[in-house]
Amino acid sequence: MTSAHRKRWTLVATILGSAMTFIDGTVVNVALPALQADLQATITDVQWVVASYALFLGALLLVGGSLGDQFGRKRVFLIGVGFFTGASVLCGLASSPRLLIGARALQGIGAAFLVPGSLAIVNATFDGAERGRAIGTWSGFSAITTAIGPVLGGWLIERVSWRAAFFLNVPLAVAVVALAVAFMDESKDSSRGKGIDWIGGALAVLGLGGVVLGLIEWPALGAGEPVVLASLVLGVIMLVALVMVEARGRNPMMPLDVFRSRTFSLANGLTLLLYAALAMVMFLVPLVLIQVQHYTATEAGAAIVPFAVIMFAGSRWAGGLIGRVGPRLPLTVGPIVAAAGIAMFVLTRVGGSYWSAVFPAVCLMGAGMTITVAPLTTVVMGAVETARSGVASGINNAVSRVAGLLAIAVFGVLLANSFNARIQPRLDELRLPAPARQEVERELPKMAGAQLRATSMSGAQRLEVQERLDEAFVEAFRVVALGCALLALAAAGFGAAIRQPRRAVAT
Image 1 (cartoon, rainbow, N blue to C red):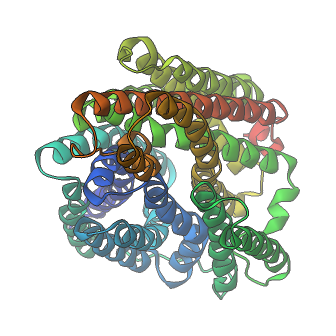
Image 2: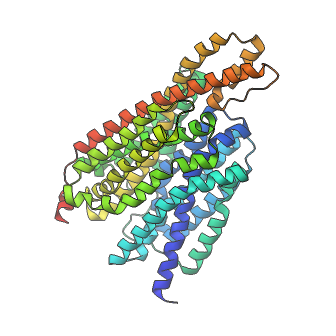
Image 3: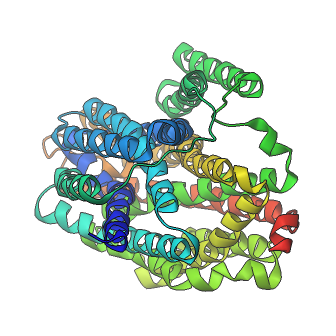
């Protein structure tokens, strides 16, 4: 068997492995309305379905990369595939929101082993010009799977069940393991220091977990609830401890000295704000389309496909931007265009047209992210010494994951408060009988996903209540969309402050 043959199938294995996480990430958002209805989940439960995965992936991503470098990337990659697949099966079998949230957390741990190993294996397998083509192929197929995922997932949700979206990972995993065992060579990084920063990983989980727990549970329990206050305080203390440990540790997962680079710090600030805005919008849009606008799951998945298609089509062009105009212009214009797209969701209304609000918003977001992503990656890698480019890339990847986690927690508070402020006056106007009002109040934590029984009110009353729930949810969504647009504009401010890295100029 030729070396070229082994390399080709190794590339296929890494693409399929990363596709498991890319598809899962996009499909879950489309599956949220169906699983919310099936499991009788509140909006808080739905937030945790997404946040529990992002928490462990973001907090342990750097630990997973270190494990692969020291103990073998192929070995850790396959462990990640197996762990992720087993957790996916548990997700598909979950009979309650809590079980699903726990299984999603396990998925996040598996993904933390799988994700960093995928591209690192490609980097170790190919050399020279071959490496560039291989990474380009890997990136291209990643974009394709991101586009296909919501449509395929929507079709499975409609025709089979939301559970099938998780079981889809099983045949993919079988193919990945078979190809990796047959064709993939083991690789390590002998230059990495010995020892894994388990303390840093644990502090990241506890710190982020505490802050997120406090913020997500805030709307339901109240700001003064001891659990909320204790979680927030503990989370902040753990994050402060994380900074201290990373500053003094011998083998830190996140070497803080890389942040001495002004360009690197600004690039990560941009990443945090822009990806937070994007993640929250992508979390809410399927809920609005399916629960309020009554799209099917397939239609909702197809509605966001233009985003991935634009990014795929423009990625090669965007890759040359920094060489032609430098980093500042694309990293300023890109977030502004994305902010304009996010702001267009303010035009969303109950019964509104896809073509007048959603389609142009999704296209503008895709254009903005296309202009931003490739130059941002180049700046991150060029802001530090060549020997530390892998560390820089890993930190930036972790920041993008944590951004989504924090966005869902922070903007979740805004969403809940905005919804409650709008729904209560509308319900008061209806003057519902006491039993009917009590039922509606019990269902309010589900927001637009509320399920009203026929026994407590007439058909006309149910329609009136549902209309008001939909209106309140859409108005709350508009408030959040505006906040996300402002966040993306703030990201543009970070981009405007970035200067051309010296090493990037030299190349």
